[in-house]
Image (cartoon, rainbow, N blue to C red; front, side, top):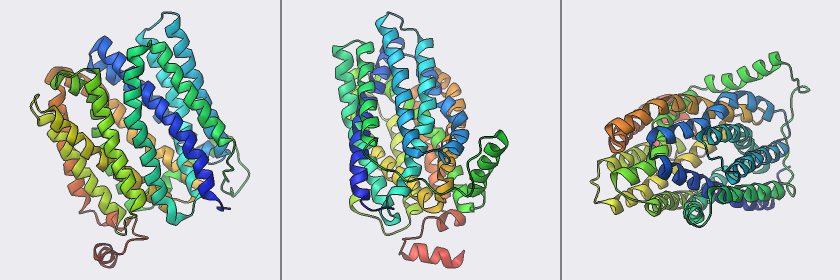
Length: 419
């Protein structure tokens, strides 16, 4: 069933790369437009909430259907829906309506489409590739996202300088169309269901409970979710407010904003490349805990730097990108190794919702705090919390047991014996 998996991923990666780079350019162009037009942390925070909250709310229910539906068709329909939403927003800009309400509504609808696409994509990977290739595939995926993060902001900054925001949005439609077309050439098998799919709400709740029990019955997985949720709660406001740190604290402009976004992508490219080329032989949990600490330090120092040390801020951003890429690759691989294929869609959806919903609610306060106390102080406080979470993670015995299938270090062995 998993023969010729490399050819399948080649088609998927080409389509996803072009889709990601166009989405990255459009997303950054929207951020520049909002930042330059309104210069408010609250506006950016509300935009982030609109882009995340609907998907987080319906995510667990989406996961139930992802596990029952054809995953390839789910990805294609989700991409198409997002493209249609972008087209509506572009037409509205052409007609002269550029209100924030329209942007928020379209971002909410795009979030619903993404709630189906991302879990379906992650759940499809183990159905195509052998288990011993999952970490390297995660590394390649991170590399693709990283290249998109490098080229996307540069393309977005150039596009918003040469074209209206309505024209820039059309780039996302082209990218989504290519991603959908690339999936036409790929067969993605689906897991065998124990029984014929049912659509009653009672069965949906039963399936949702099954995904939750898959997490709760493994203490290590439960702790991984908990720590990751807290870290995401701290990272997301920082990610949203990165442009304002460049504008308000370091007194940069749109090109400085694009440089920071690109350097984050460079760091992720390096991290993803290292994971895809040099497959770690030690515990992936050890790597995750370490990346928490590294990422937290880089974010806290970024807020602490004086305004005249912008290029040191750039260097810290690269290091943070490396840590983020390694974390993402290891985290996704641990889930793909530990969760049964028939439950993977709902588990990924549950994770995205569990991690995002508290974060979205927190953005309501962090946007206000950034405007009142300063974005740089928010970076220092939240970065410090991430460092603390990383340090605490090393002392959790259940968590240390997780993800050691391919570990071969004294650390992993001793953990297994003593626990």
